Length: 118
Image (cartoon, rainbow, N blue to C red; front, side, top):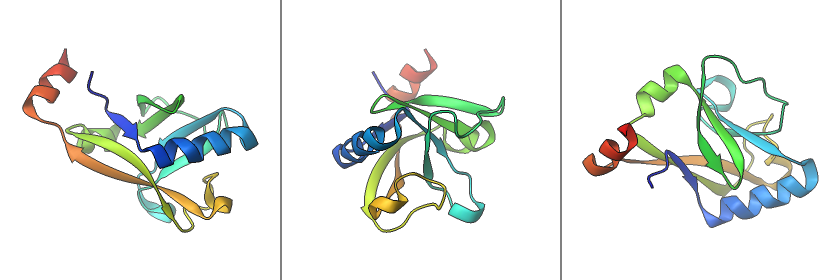
């Protein structure tokens, strides 16, 4: 089954650490401005999901949302959430760990796109 959002092993490890510290988590793909276009990690409920947000799927058991307008631009790609060294968004929970989440992407193949429609 093709997933719209997935993550690396390093991401899973960091998410598990953050779950131990903060409890259940959620993600929202930032659309720009202050933190660029970064995946933002919040304690469950600390970010209010609106009617203009789309649930892409889950990573490491955490729901992952994106703004519907931004989704329209990225719907032909799979988002791959990774971890790199450095400080991320100031509101995202991973900042104090000296790491930040990073969105990578790849285009879906024709076969994958067809399976997503169904």
